[in-house]
Length: 284
Length: 280
Image (cartoon, rainbow over all chains, first blue to last red):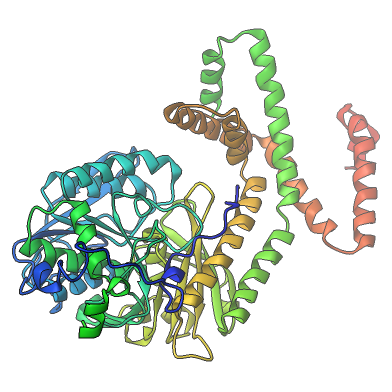
């Protein structure tokens, strides 16, 4: 029943135009050296394995195309985990929306659906953790996590998994939660935490110099793939997250083997609010 | 349940002191359950409705609802509903597994939709039940202090602008935090298992597996108390008293007089052949 006494962290508020400060372009780690062309010019994310840890993916949706692999994870009454690697769909539309955004940014990446969101709230935390562990152990190269848990008793487990991913050079792109309550794994320093900003360009993103939420990407009125091969206009950090995941996928498609800290360095250099004067004058 | 109790007794080595302590604890917790029933009366419910209505005024929306996660964790129930759908929807449930509210509950993420009428699935769910087909939706999770999802707070059909924006989302999240506090306040008084678990956990500094074991055991213990016939009768009476206390002062006074009379006759009634027994 305790209420956090600290001021409410302003996750997506930080990215509001007028609030977000410009961050200094620090040569040579800025857009004059690390150009967009260098970073992902010409890349389609070819062959990069992206795990969408979510509600499933509808592979029949035209915005998604092929899904390379599946696992649906559930927990029974005794917290025993069950893994089903047969193809599955998406009852919520959420995972499909994320897949569509990533597919649009990295057309030749390999999408994997790790279905951890279902019709049940019990076992939610352990199923989510199991999905993340599966992705790490199966050699995924990017994780999209448009979900989170607030359970303090999962802090340690997710921290360990986030560290494991970090040391294996797997960027975990996680949606911030937008409340004053903790949300894991989005608050860890080892992940790329994302909140929504009001921009519309899918290839423009911001860097927040006051973390824990480090990146802002389009998350307001985003047209997304949805249920029954349809589409919907949606708002939330859930939809900003795959924008960053898609860009990271393109980056790794051109420069496989980058560490997570290198990925973050590139993103900071190319953030809209970190543009050097030259780049701003040239009009990126 | 009796089996669990005797197992507990065995685990405590069955010493006379331990058994006496357990008996006292049982009585104390039974009383706590009764007090909880009294405290759980309408004031908390009124405040919840007020929070939802305020949210719907501040973020202008003609319709809104607070869904609560059902105990079994597979349902969402309309706890507070405002607007046209209030009368028909209050108290109805629908399964998790699809829909915006369900998605918010399982993902822990806030979501807004600008063109819900284009969502092919929505028509089959709540909208079909309620007869109300929203165009714009804003839904945020209501999360307890321990991180569990207690429910979902939802507003429909934003007025004054085409759809809900990020500022609306942040603002509704603030209201959701208030709702969470109220729900936990209400829950603390009605859940004996929660009360026992929290009391024991307040000992503090326990390793997670031990705390988990204590919560499990205390839930079983509390369930046994709540199932006990005397406790159930006490709680039932307490709930009736709460209803009367909510009414007029005259009704309250009459009820108090009747209860005092019964209490005085209580001992007499337990004697066989008493006047009261013959009367009844």
